Amino acid sequence: MRRNSASFRLQIEKLRRGGGGRRDRQIYAYGATTMLALGLVLNTFGIGLFCWAIFVLAVYALPFFVALSIGMTAFQNGAGVVGALLAGTAGGALTLAFGQAAVAITRSLTLRIAIATAFAIPAAVAGYHVVFAGSQIGVPSLAWRELFACLGAVCIAVTSWTRLIVLVEARPFEPDGVVESPS
Image (tube, rainbow, N blue to C red; front, side, top):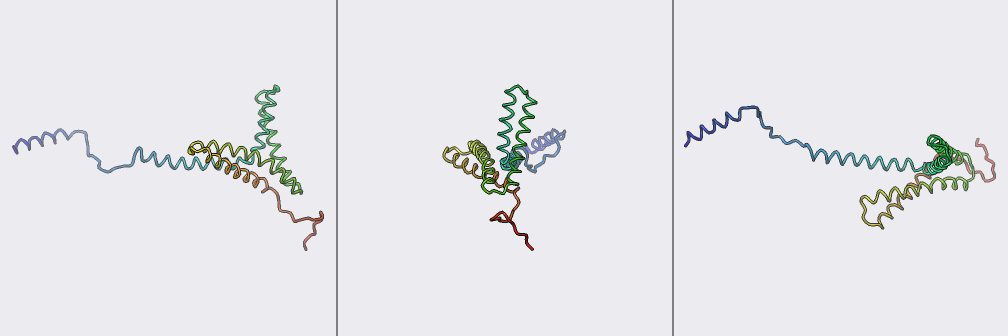
C-alpha cells in the first residue's frame, strides 16, 4: 500500500510540473473593496462640489432669470438661436453689473436692502427647488423634505445677500450728509 501511495504522489507531482507556477497565498484587496472605497471618496467629493456650485451660483439667480427671459423673448420674436443667446447673455451680464454697481454706489440703506432683496429672493426660490429635489433622493418624509428645502432656501438667500453686500465699502455714518475729515 505504501508503494502505491508513493507512486501516486510521483504521478501527481509530474502532472503539477507544467506551467502552473507557485500559488500566491497573499490576499489582495481587488474588486469590490477597492470600488467601494473609491465610490465613497468620489461621492463625497461630488456632493461637496455640487454644494459649492449651488452656493457660488446663488448670487447669479436673478441675472440668469433675466437672461433666460430676454433670450426666450428674442427667440420668439425671430432673433434666431445665436441672437437670442447673445441678447440673453448681454441682459444677464448687465443685470449683474448694474445690481452690483447700484449696491456699491448708493448711499441709501433702504435702496441697498431693496436691491439685495431683489437678488436674494430668486436665489431663495432656486435654492428651495434644488434642495427639495436633492432631498427626494434620501428623505422619504414629505415634511422633512419641506423642512430641508426651506432651510436650504434661507441659507442660499443669505449667501446671495452677503455676496452682493460684500462689494459695499464701509462708509462712516453721515447724519447730515457732511463727513468731517479726521485729523
